[in-house]
Length: 339
Image 1 (cartoon, rainbow, N blue to C red):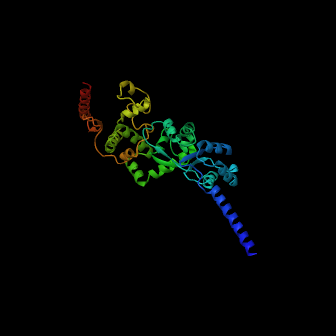
Image 2: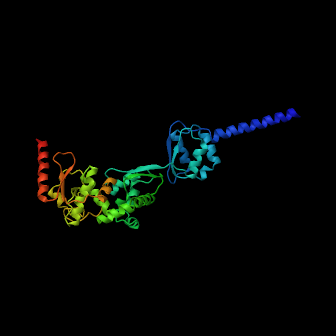
Image 3: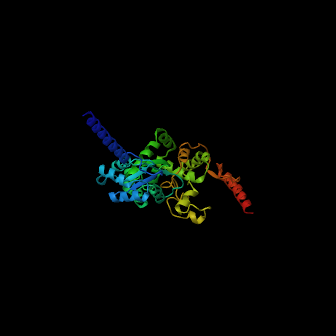
């Protein structure tokens, strides 16, 4: 009897051990290759397309075991669209449950560089996510949606501040915009709002002026001083006469020299023709330019031009006579280069 009991116990333990090992090998044992990959499941996908994608990626070592776990978890009837990271050495259960419950891997979207139009912004925003740039452009050009967030069509682009933001691949254009609105509201804290009010500007006007300032100089240390020049012109009722706005009006940022024919264009962005700020930003300015406007220098300068040293910095003047003298020195330096 003891032998029978011992033998039976041994068999039971053996069965349990084998079952446990098999369960481990199917559910938890690493079943992915040594390379990292990302599985993209668009909206409207079916189960077969998910399996096809995994097969084409060649990241699953044993698809048979993966499918067993998928059936056990009823993945065919319940999975979420998204972007899923497949890590080296990942088990079937971990991957299947990520897909089933929508445990997406977020990605980063960075706003930087020269973004002058909504079309360009749409391209940047849609580059890494599921929706296309056309859908993103439709959102950016939706007047009612911009109004609902407190912007005009011309100023809507001001809401998308330069930075790196984390999103899910499946984010919709409106969801994305609402997230940017939250970040915009955080950016305009009590301190920045007080500075804007002191300068006599709204946040959108600050960003509009910053977009001009950032196009005038590549030197961050000059931003407050250039901003002071334009604020002096605004307060004095003098036209801004900002060359970057002319380039925007004629839709050609590559222009090296503004000519009289360019100044004749009838556009609200022609700051030689119309006084005050243009209707909206001419580019998405960097944060240092925005803060440069908020921390503008309080001086008496009304003009500035490039220095004859041609080092990218500028000379500032309070009178037109002094400005002409500075401009002649600059032109003389340019002429020497052509000899």
